[in-house]
Length: 214
Image (tube, rainbow, N blue to C red; front, side, top):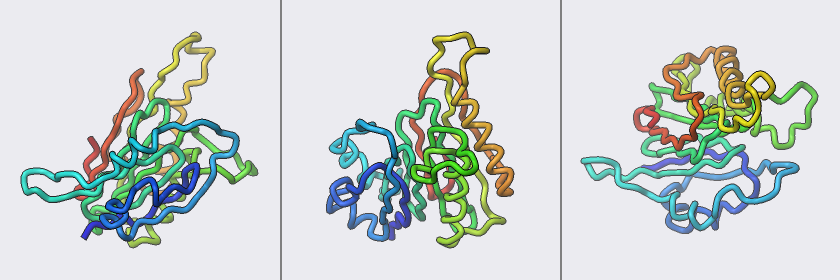
């Protein structure tokens, strides 16, 4: 049975249109809650392309099927069994992946800014690394993950725009990576692997079957 068990965040509530009838059947236990991105406009991804991308895909030599799910910025997804969580076009943004290797539950947060300060408006909080990682951790526990069996992997955090001298330019990507490391350490989650920094974008695939990040 394929289970895509939890989604949180995003800019709108197009869950039914976005996945289509086949997607809803393949991921029957998937649902979405809304956290609007205040103050942002425009579309980061084309909905038709996402509907095509969020489909069941072939899963290797055995012919198994996996539920592949694209995660937008400011979203969290928690899935089990054969799901592949995908973050497209990571630049300075970061994908934080947490995996419970005993229960085979995995989650990904796609955050774009490093830190939400104390007292800041909570609306749109999943755009911030510190808030997104904490929510991801808490929701994984709610859905059966165990703290002692969790570890993390990071991808993204590139320094894409280099128009000013480095000493005069905030390196958002580097700050995102540092904040992710800090937050995971605070939660007692070791980081097993990273693909971060540099000056190029990434698309990453987190396989919940075994916790691999490609």
